[in-house]
Image (cartoon, rainbow, N blue to C red):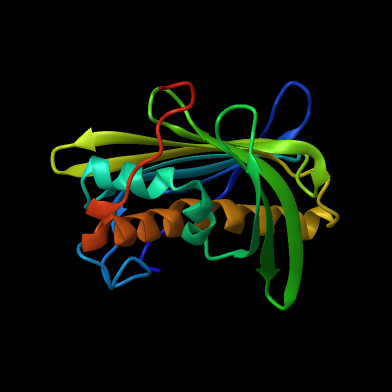
Length: 219
């Protein structure tokens, strides 16, 4: 991938917990993993932060696709896992109490020759603002707590896809020496590959005929 990263930096808060941050600076990815689609997404910022076993992601990527099409792609809850290449299994469990969908997922996370299957259940719904929110279901899988929020902002004829996530990895049965690089890779892929695949899906002609799901609580 034709992108550089600032070196990892580590500091310690007043509680003594190590905090690690990694950045991918703003640049256009040309001839990289974002190649092969109509245009190339522009990375404004991808940042992963670790505090203990809590991981936080913030990404801001401009997609060469109109806002309406991007929202349609994201609003098809059952297809959201298709936007993540690490997902291996998806089971739709049905509607949840918040007007969205509950789904069980299995992903395969690899670090070199070491692979780990991670299972979790999440509730996904559209907020009145148009944001898509996925919340982990406690006591059901390897990820006990966390959330991912997808925000879309109109930017001329393009769309800024802003993803924020907070994942508690304390229940994933891996030693820290393996867990940390695995989670770093996982969250960076969440941002980069999801942006690429959303842009690809939103650029397809049949996206016009797809119907977006209404926000939770709307009539």
